Length: 393
Image 1 (cartoon, rainbow, N blue to C red):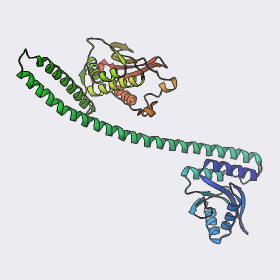
Image 2: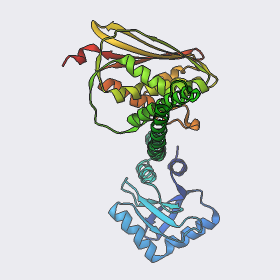
Image 3: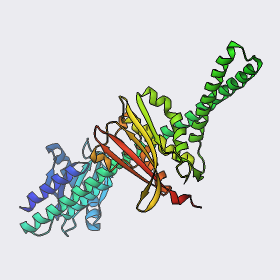
Image 4: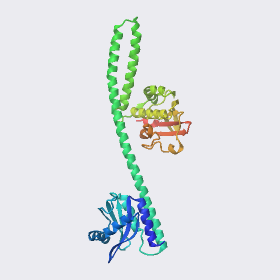
């Protein structure tokens, strides 16, 4: 490989990996600046570049970069499509540099690509050495470009997460406000219904109807109260509690959603389970997240089972909680990532990827363990284990 073909290959690769419109290598001698190799340099651009090199002010600017050994940039009308020029001097001790034109600015990663490109041009004529250095430089440039793309993708993902988090916060505030608005008229309904019942005789045909209204209003108030308790931010307070009781409370909150989703709920709660040391609101959130996750996995209905039991693991006693569904299941490639924050397969359906990651964090903070078993088209089972020794305080 000749040095000319080597330089042309470097120019081509660097342009492909950067934001450059075109690039050229120019050298300085007693006769001034001359154009050597180039890439994407049309005849019109070449004529403009030669005029640029012939200008004394530009010649001094280029010479300053060459003698100082540092890259420079400035706005320039050298090309109608590219309004900024960057220069990258040789690192091999020779009197040449790269002239690179860009539409506006070259990113930091693109500038690093061109610095590496300048280092890739050797001073000697050994073809084997040139080929080796070229391959090494190209590899480094590709790695930088991949890192740049990864950073851009991460930035876009972070921006998307912030937008989604803001939406979730707004929805949470709105839900709490709606719950308060519902609670006030329900209080009035309960109060006036009770007064009406007291004013009626036992034999009144209206008494039975009003008692039904009172029961349903109290049930609605209970649901609203639980929703407010769940949405309200509180300090973490751990007390000894009954897992079965928490399951019953969450089922009340989700019963209507289960019915409208065509999902059959089966509960198998072992009576007399030992109490565990937990934060009730946080464990409600864990169970609610698992129930919602199961519902999403059964868009056409199905069967959900919630079970509790006592189990020994590695010689230590645990209370176990399982949420099983007959849904779509989780693919093997996603199974290892489901607890990662913001990982979701339901982004187009409003999924945030936060439910399971929050669930994992709460369970581990309680000293517990969460595991998942799943097969595609056969359903999933989430198993949560709470250590009993944590209750001994």
